[in-house]
Image 1: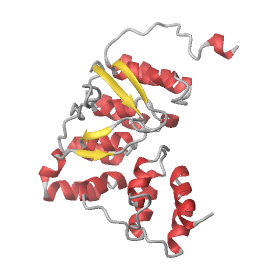
Image 2: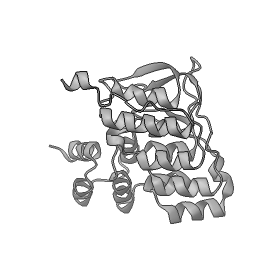
Image 3: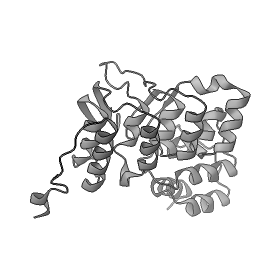
Length: 247
């Protein structure tokens, strides 16, 4: 396997050790891969885990460049760095970000959208304390779809990685009844799926679709949280997980 292939595989599985092994062999942390920087490749990869920010940190340690210091602080989940950046230049908190993303779109997104997408609790905490708009809307596409608020990025993640950030948003009063005309999950990837008339609750339920590959228990845990936060009654006897499917 070439160094380049090994690095991409390391990104796919969030292996910090493998990333550092490849870069230690002299691979340039800024050398373009199919026209994209290694950092961009990592950011748009489809895996989500607690190791993501450590992978970013490894790239930076080996010289990876990012012109947007606030965005980098969010990707690093570095509370101290992010707080310093916001203190020195408060206007950076209101910037919009365009990142290619394998799941929920990050076009015209806020820094809070980004923190939520990657489950970066430290960054999300700093941003909320600094007064970022918890209901900021991402960009609409050419069909009038997307425009989601940050909470949408937390309700349907791999292994429910974003549950702590979901709880944080709900504790700060994030709305659970926002309705979108539609949202395109995985836009531009082979698993692209457009869902119509979406709320955070229905988007959480999308995890039951087979292409999402989410655990049923995780899906319903999030639905219960969202329902309770919205002051909605929850039936006492919910058939979760589905007894029929359990067989």
